[in-house]
Amino acid sequence: MVDPLLSVKNLMSGYGDIQILWGVDFHINEGEAVCLVGANGAGKSTLLRTLSGLLRVRSGQIAFMGQDLTNRSPRQVLSHGIVHVPEGRRLFGPMSVLDNLLTGAYLRTDRANIRHDLERMLDLFPILAERRHQAAGTLSGGEQQMCAIARGIMSKPKLLMIDELSLGLAPKMVDHLGEALQKVKREGLSLLLVEQDVATAFELTGRGIVLDSGRVSLIGPTEELSINPMVQQAYMGIA
Ligand code: ATP
Image 1 (spheres, rainbow, N blue to C red):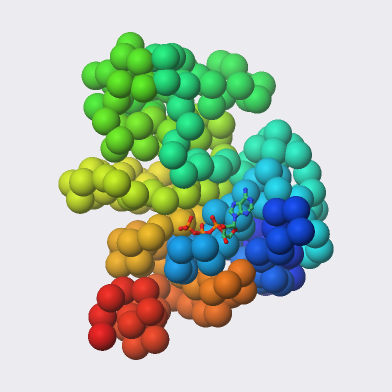
Image 2 (cartoon, protein in one colour):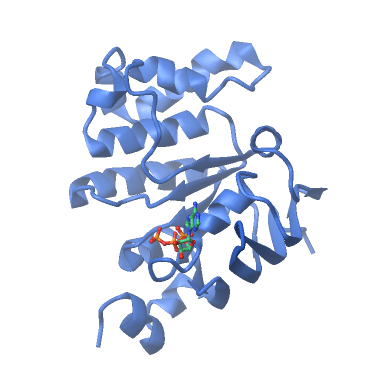
């Protein structure tokens, strides 16, 4: 059997005295798109922060492409191919779209390919090409999300983790983002999406993880989760 791309075992983490994650187990296979859903405060962002090295692992293990990444620094995690697009996007507002995209590549050593990847991102998101010289802070929310995702992909990750993909965005913008993500997935990128709109999350991914009070309560194919009455009632507003 092929090893998973990412394997998370019995992960515990939190903030100061407060423990948020209580033994989280899951894996992501190479080329897979997985969503992480759950109520507000369930620990979804905390899980992404722990995976990306921003929060300490209290116990448990994170393995990625056969390497132990438990308690590595954010820079080391990034250099191994996991990129985190945080909630709120965190672009450099006064800097141009192009310069923001280039900051995504700052750890890369294959300088010659960076230009090519930049062009690829501008093809993927034509609106960013139009606005390439504009300050990122002046973009619309959806354009900023595109810029943040493109910046993430500029680091040449194997796994792209996006926190709150669609929050505050118009449905049409979410469709554009969804199409772009399907495209990069077809090119081999694996995805972990945190998404408050569970129906959208299930449309964009093949497998879902339901987090409940810092524990995994369900994992399965999204086509099964989307017809699970418990999931429908708790997370999709279907009585
Ligand atoms: P949401 O959709 O509301 O962001 P979430 O599932 O992403 O939900 P988290 O943001 O991971 O949830 O928060 C999980 C818990 O951790 C919450 O109870 C939250 O109050 C707490 N928490 C988050 N950030 C911090 C922090 N910096 N310090 C202390 N507690 C925090």
